[in-house]
Length: 139
Image 1 (spheres, rainbow, N blue to C red):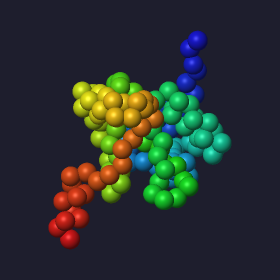
Image 2 (spheres, rainbow, N blue to C red):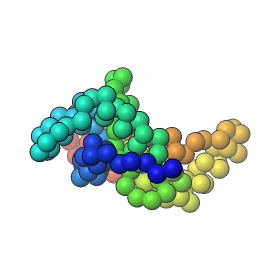
Image 3 (cartoon, rainbow, N blue to C red):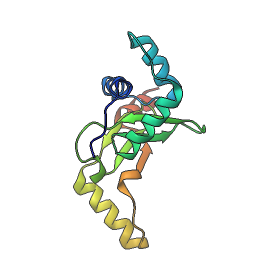
Image 4 (cartoon, rainbow, N blue to C red):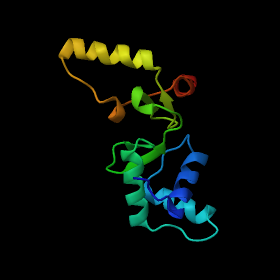
């Protein structure tokens, strides 16, 4: 069954695509849409509903922001993002797509050690990218 694409969903996806290197809370997304939109800005409940759908279909990744209880959302650009792991830099927020063969090797290693199967669609490894480590070391 085909899904109807609403104007609100188009606005939200366009904003996420234009800011694909950043993750935002629902409140931050609404604020950005108010600044960028010429007309109607979706309400908070609509943005929550749309974001839930985008996360479920794998278009958007959901992260806990820092040590808070707030979630941040970031669009996943590219095909087959459910076939590999992602690395998320806690410094700059960059989302890195791990090569599928490396992902498979890592997942196989975990399974062989612990007989535990990891859900790659829902798994993100958090750490620091090379640029942020370099910046931190230079300070």
